[in-house]
Amino acid sequence: MKKNEINMLEGAIFSNIVKVALPLAFISILQQFFNAADVAVVGRFASSNALAAVGANTPIVNMFLTFFTGLATGGNVAISMQIGKNEKDKISSSVHTISLLAFICSMVLILVGEVFAHPLLSMIHTPETVFNQALLYLRIYLFAMAFAVIYNFASAILRSKGDTQRPLYCLIFSGVLNVLLNLFFVIVLHMDVVGVALATLISNIVCAFSTFVLLMKEPEPFTLKIRQLGFDYPILRMALKIGLPAGVQGMLFSISNIMIQSGINQFGPDCIAGNTAAMNFEFISYFIVAAFGQTVTTFISQNYAAGKYDRCRKIFRQSIVGSVLFCLCASLCFTFFREFWLGLFSTDPNVLEYATIRMFIVVLLESFTTFNEIPAGGLRGMGISMPPTIIAILGSCVFRIVWMATIFAWYPTIIVLMLVYPVSWFLISIGQMGTYLYYEKKKV
Image (cartoon, rainbow, N blue to C red):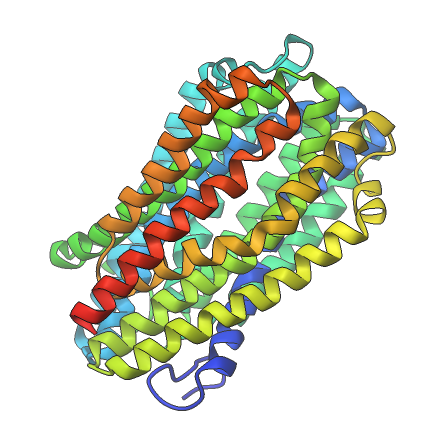
């Protein structure tokens, strides 16, 4: 194996899972850091309204990003299975099929985002005092996110052979660039919301371009050649069969968060700002779990295709251990040192009070999402994507709608609103774990 690849079919399991998952987690964390940098800079150097304008967009941005990230998972599984079966002749077709799909998805995101930016902000009851700023930020940011989609598809291709380090390096460089541009645009040029959005656009372009350069310089059969871009329809169907349900699952989590954001918005700008600050640490903790979920998908897809079923069982169980361990460490660090972390975003006592509530109810318990993500990732690795999506719809969307319409309507407090997260995680975990164990016994 080359130094930037990992042999997933042989050798140690836990250490190799960690070698793939942690860089993958850092990739997601750095992507979140783009938005966190926006939040921190406008919160400390602009105004509370600017902070609320950026924060009001968070659920909408995540809705689009999680959908296309899930869609990219289909490409990852398709190539991973071909590696497991040693079908080298099909890998090149997969690379060009998935790359073309990435370009098309980015164009769709720009078009849909620009058309629906205004109604989406209206739907979540964005306060009038920050609406115009939030709208301007969202329109620029969605254009920037089109390049993040391209990056996610390219990194999914590299991840299929265990290469998570080089996409991470690309993101580190663009992340540093994003912070520097944020500070320049906001502090020097006084561009507040527009400045942080433009900083994200420029850094995303750099990140997407550098990752695709890596693909163009890859040895065969992973080499990307622009003239060979085209759809291999059997591969496209396989990628969409896995990716679309995964994307819908991620999007539904975000849609339910949009509904919850609508409830948060009812408590005013201080509550929006406080939740925006706390969500950054919630996302970081969750990204650790999600990284192990994506890693278990790649590992199981290769080993399942190779017929190594006993190894699949070991991968599943050791992924759960790693996910809980690393996520819990992060959650405890953020929660018990919250004064320092939240102080990076705001010094307003009212904002910090709302943020603390979310830290204790949501961030501290984030490791429980392991029992949602790892089973869903394992099922997708076996080529089963619809059952975990249905469970996610019922738990993250239907249940939360019912909670908002009943429990929260009867007791409209911020604590009751936040409790919807751990309760829904518990219900989803029962469904996902039971479903995985059923298919594991049946197929593995």
